[in-house]
Amino acid sequence: MAKSKRPSRKASPDDVVIENRRARYDYFIEDTLEVGMKLRGTEVKSIRDGQASLAEGWIRASAEPVGLSLHAVHIAEYPNAASSFQHDPTRTRQLLAHAKEIRKLAQRSEERGIALIPLKIYFKSGRAKLLVGVGRGKGQVDKRQTIKKREAAREIERALRQR
Image 1 (cartoon, rainbow, N blue to C red):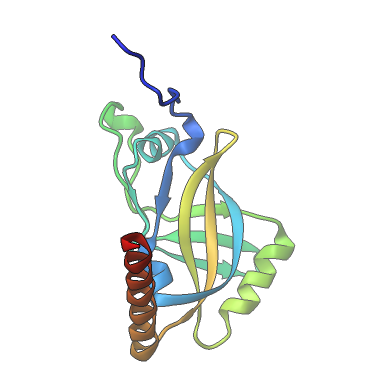
Image 2 (cartoon, one colour):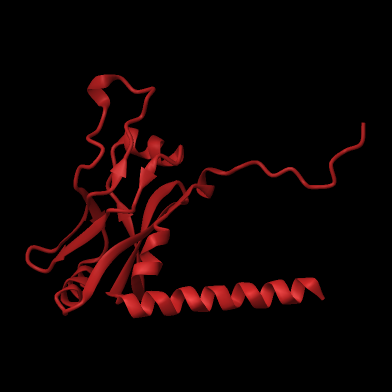
C-alpha cells in the first residue's frame, strides 16, 4: 500500500480556536488585547472540545476597582464530569490583564460608540487566552459596504482562477 504524501500532523492542544466571526461584521475593530481567563477545570475541557460560543458575549472594564469581566459567553457543561463539579454555562468570568491595560480599556469603553468585544478564545502554552477587541459599531450603510467589498474580492478571485 502506498504511503500518503501529506505529512501526518498530530493536533496539538494549542490548535483549539473559537472565533466570534460576527464581531468583525458588526464592528470596526480598532485595537486588540490578549488577556488570560480565570476558568474552572470543566470549562477548560469544554473549550478544548470546541463547545463554546462568543456570539452574545461582551466585556466590562472598570477602573475603580480595577477589573475586567466577561459576560454572556456560553461554555457548555462538560458531559464526563460529575454533577458536583459542573460549572454554570453563562457565568461571569474574570479576565486577567495588567492594571494599566485594564484602566486604558475602561477609559476607551466610556467613549460613545465604543464596545469591548470578545473576538477569539485560543490556547497558548496550555493556557486559555481571549482576544479582546475595542470596536466601534457599524451602521447599516457600513455593513452594506463590507458586503460589497467581499463580493468584489470574490469576483476578482473567480476571474483569476478562470485564466
